[in-house]
Amino acid sequence: MATSLSSELKKIYYQHPNLVRFHTALVVDKHLCIVMELVANGSLRIMLKNEGGNLDYKIRLNICKGIAKGINYLHTAYSTHLVHRDIKTDNVLLTEDYTAKICDFGLGKILCQKFNSETVITSHICGTEAYLPPEALQGKVSRRLDIYSYGVVLLEILSGKSPLYNGSEKCRFLVGLFHLHYNHNRTAFPIDETANWPNDYKRGLMELAKWCLKTKYRKRPLMNQVGSKNSLIIIRNNFPCCASYIIKALILHLPR
Image (cartoon, rainbow, N blue to C red):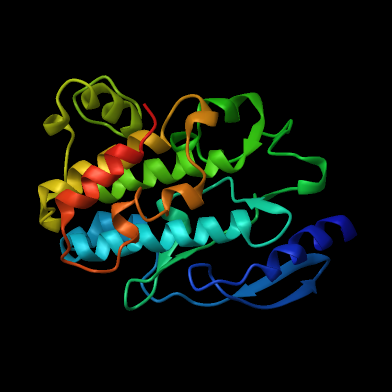
């Protein structure tokens, strides 16, 4: 109990505008209870499913931006990196003004930098299958695990579809459908047109998702690379902006 309590309380120190805020912790009947802020609009998954038409492309881009900032904070705020391990649209909550806040740190794995542990091996496979990269099935945990999951979230925000794809193609997951179409016919990948996506933004998000969803984890970016000025369309705050210029910068920055 003491070890579990210590591990959970370490995560309390992670405070950021794009993380659900901690209020207090207490033990009730030998169970640790952590009280967090109430986030009014509920999960991004439910919002995409029920009210996708209310989320135009600018709101969705800012949600992508907020998630990226929250993950980057978890990965870099302290000398010990926290890998969330269950980044998904169910674990992204939205405030009244659609600010994204990451929740549910229960699966978080702290990587101790002093042992140079960029990657650790665990016997417990955690997370949600549709968001897990191949190496997770071997018990490998690194910050790039969250990057892969973020790539799946980008596809959901772009398409409005569930990560468990049940369309006519022989794909179990949305990420499989994306890979099926990306190199052959990108226009066949389903896009939620209720968001009024400009073509350059659609292309930019698909390029970014492809980078995040690399099968070999070392080829994926770290989140601070995703958020760098020349690599991520959605980190920019000036809407509308010269989308074609940003896309060119994005493509030039991507690894070959």
